[in-house]
Length: 317
Image 1 (cartoon, one colour):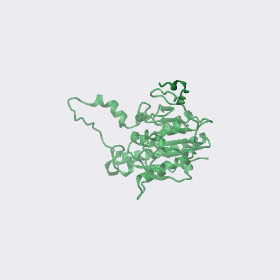
Image 2 (cartoon, one colour; image 1 turned 120 degrees about the horizontal axis):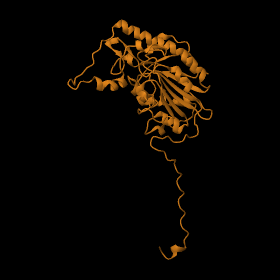
Image 3 (tube, helix red, strand yellow; image 1 turned 45 degrees about the vertical axis):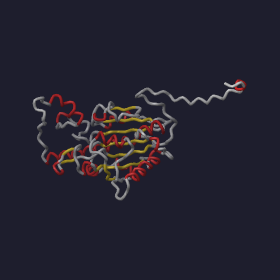
């Protein structure tokens, strides 16, 4: 310090930076003030292929879109990756020709301004997490919720991120039991992801006797049974099974169509329940094969019927 420096006024201290609330690992930050007006619900009819939905000739579901049901295509052929993709904000696509993917993505995301009743959503804030529930909750002030039917989406999986509540339902095939759990607040909008299991194998309504269902394991069931089924002395183990004949496959397809007819009544209840300012999307995570080209089901299958899904959206009032 020089001789005259001691007479100088000390330089003002820089203003302290505003403190950000500490968030424990796994905990969620406080909700900001809402930046959107509409509640938003995505209903995923698990495994429901487009032509099964159309064959059901529903009376209530399509009221959402004035009777219009689009054929769209999913980005994945089974439940977990398809739901992950949906929660990046990318909905089933129209497979447009002569269009760069980036241009399609931009239009698809821009449409959320209208769906959510928001203006100028800052989609750049999704980077680097690329997770739509985070944008909804932490930027737009939504309460975020998930109600899932399939165990492969249970709350301990990575898909449970940025949700205020995430519930695996007691039954895999009872959409009606989800409805009493839906609540809507007056001071901020709500987002709900509803994964509906009636349309998933074995295509069963809630009141059916489960002892009569044929049993084929999904990924969740395969993991649980692997230790019991694998013989250490035969590492090339392959489970023996009798593939369904075409008559049985036709019956199973009719069962899926019948579950859509049943769900039509549950949707009527949903539409009566939601507040006026609620935008709803109804679609599926993937399709299903019922004997076409020798395939049944979905997953490790490359066939158009595994990717064709119904798509409709709108507001019921």
